[in-house]
Length: 383
Image (tube, rainbow, N blue to C red; front, side):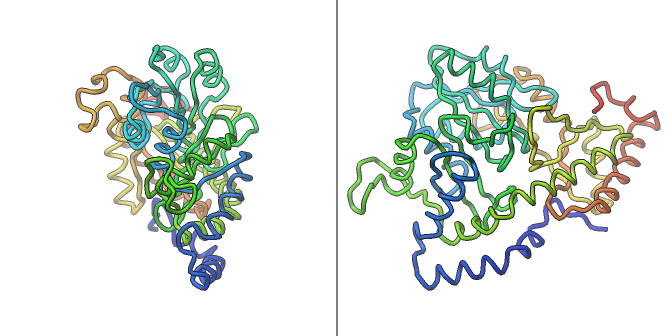
């Protein structure tokens, strides 16, 4: 058996007819830039996220940066975010002219630790960017409480969490704005790059619309120094087709995650431990192992594709050398970076395939642990 990390071919097959019909419409109208499909997707995605507005842009990174700029975040400001996020979160802060400040994460969920956020607040802090990592919502109630007490903005990084809920509410509906990515492998993806900013603030939405399109409220009238960061009309058509299936696809991911948990209970690895008050959408199914490299190599021999998200924390990246704290500053993040392993996860992943992957993991994890009883090889929690 060959098990891919993601299966975009199966996902495309489910929407191929709808996408073809929508693209024919775009070709017929020739409204390739900010066309009708973009406007329709923005309405539908805002409604899905339970927000007043959605503005389509060209990537999740642009969504974060333009949200910061629309909120007036820039030079002289500090923005707190998770130390274990993808580097684009920090890059977007830097692109806006602000300074990224990192906070360590909760060892169980790997989402940002509110106590670490509180400790990182300074007089220069302007905003907090909680990251809904792997599809697991960040702890928004304590984050928002910190923001209210210190007069800070909140911008959610929801790039991996389309459709996830925290205490019954969709992620993206908590902050002053939220950013989504539509990279093809996301729970809601398109056929290239894409992103969106969602917000309840009409003024913020208008500023993002202007910024993404050369700063112009109407053609050849440029009120802001803007950019070319528009969501492509063809990609919007793909997103509309996929959005109609997103809840079903997320349900399939949850079923696959449950199969993994049941099948890996006796494996010498640490399993994900979602909080009780969230609805995880399992963009990634991430386990932890003290012998990650050996486990990866063994799974590769069994033709099971895996990934690591993320092997080098932001503060240890060369791009931020000398600008961020040194190794040892964020112990939970740094320990997880050495142990996390992402297993195959996609809507078409069936129980038989999960069983095969789990059997390969059990045999290799036991061998790596020297034949000891499951759970005894790792000096960490068992879930």
